[in-house]
Length: 184
Image 1 (cartoon, rainbow, N blue to C red):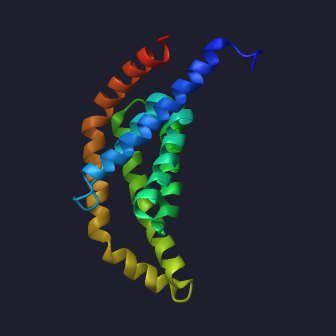
Image 2: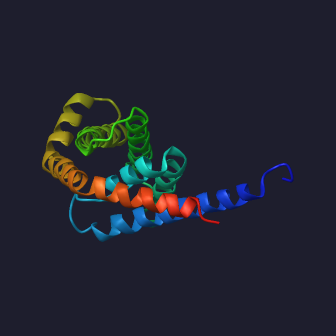
């Protein structure tokens, strides 16, 4: 420990605190809108965290959020989808930022695709784990078609939230990051 700079412990502590705050924000944000089917701001917030703070903050926050969901709601097939989806979302936003993408329209399009893939992924996991692969195609199609209205609402609401709030929230988050991480 003596070979490390004194500021490293402070930076590590700040990182843990930020991950905890981000995870709590995700849990609270999900709860606030839980009464509206398939309308959520968790996707928007994770995208903002990933864009503003990067992989090292957003990935642990998304993972802690998924574990918190298990503690609150128990373990179900959806948990598998959560661990894959939220972390893939972080990864996708970080790749876009790394490639220099600044347009909220491109991020919105990417989020719409990722939200669409979440519907496919969760349907695939639900169908395959609830009945195996016997008549899988037929059962999957039936299951997916039954949820189409919810998937459309989910994609549309995430797209609207992203196009309206992504830029202002990332601007605020970047200013907060500068102030928080550079303070003593």
